[in-house]
Image 1 (spheres, helix red, strand yellow):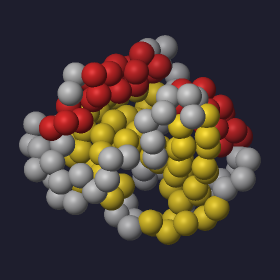
Image 2: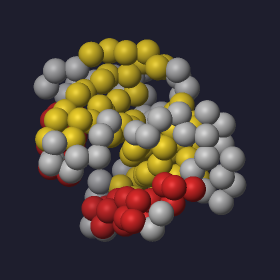
Image 3: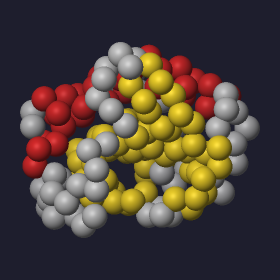
Image 4: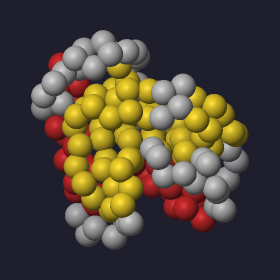
Length: 146
């Protein structure tokens, strides 16, 4: 799977979060529920100071096999005290660009990424959804590197 190495500035994400892990049998439903809450329940419309309209799925706070998943938007300054605020640290990332069905393209990409021998830092990996076309999505996946 092709990728490029990029250096990113710090990003602030505001949204909704849950704890899960790759071995959690409820992982898919927990993640799906967060996307449902964020969009269908209107939370996305309440996020203030958005940098852009891109959706972000952030994986952070890794402990063993568990992590926190946050679904949200990048903001210039967090003002939503009732929502989760997470920081994606500045640093070096492997950037993977995928296109296709939002769910299956991302799942397939992560399956391939997990097989790669990347020098991961586990400080914050994220998906940035560049459009909202469910079947023809453009998605950039960033994996934090040491």
